[in-house]
Length: 155
Image 1 (cartoon, rainbow, N blue to C red):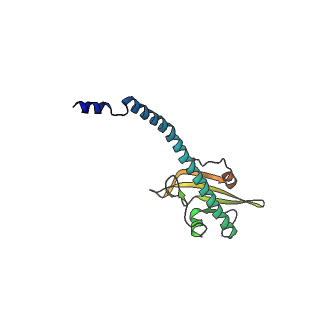
Image 2: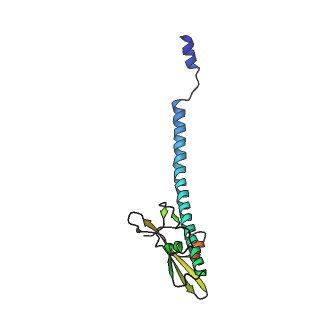
Image 3: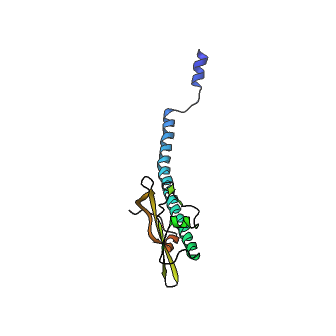
């Protein structure tokens, strides 16, 4: 019996205070890390919207070069997919569905330069219509190419 008591006293372990201190430290680290991760995810989604918009504009440029679209026209994502300039409609990173197929690229000629403006909108899968959430609303390609541009929703 005495041997058992001595064996119990010789056991090494952590005290309740030490365990609580570790839990508090982990809580502080989590409180700092979780918002940072959320910000990283939001930024990556905004960058994905920007990349998708530039991809759609590039497809519209191919359509203009192929003489399927002329300056003054407005082309939809659906048109670009149907005509073979896009393999498929890009995915909306916020909803994991396609963008609204009626999202448009407006092509205008200003002197000798051709300008491209994109309106990129989310699709409401329940009604199959634009939800009112527009990631880009008539934004010029040159603005998208600027490094500081971040996609933001405007209702």
